[in-house]
Image (cartoon, rainbow, N blue to C red):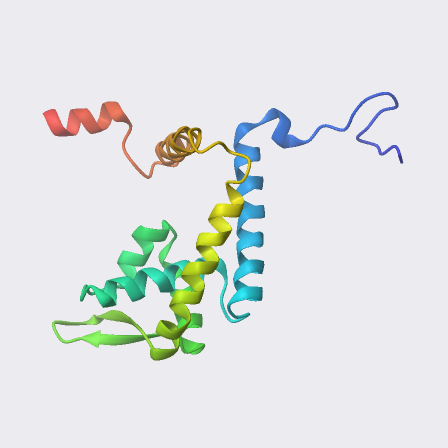
Length: 178
């Protein structure tokens, strides 16, 4: 083993994720995203990523339920900024998976609809993501899965508070009582 400047003889290499919980979560999220993108590309089409596939599924379901879907809905679902959503939607429209149509009551709004191509890929995407989720949770006992989800949901909520994206429990209670 080659000794680097960051590693002294007799010591073991430490990774940021060993010291910082947040670094572990970030690294995990990056690897999951790369793995899902690779799975969707290999099993469905290289034109889609995991995020685009999940988003297409949400749009198809909303269309099937006769619910209108707009960019702001996507921003909420995916918890990403407007500029990022715009780029994703433009790419999906360019690749023929969705269309954006002006709304009569407000020309600034664009209703999102899955195209026939998007609908045709929907079931393959759904199956691929379901299999990915199953594979991702391998080794976690079924009884422990709800606890793992609860812990991750709490980490997400804490991060949202730290980012100023949602009120702290005390602020939320004060707003309801005030």
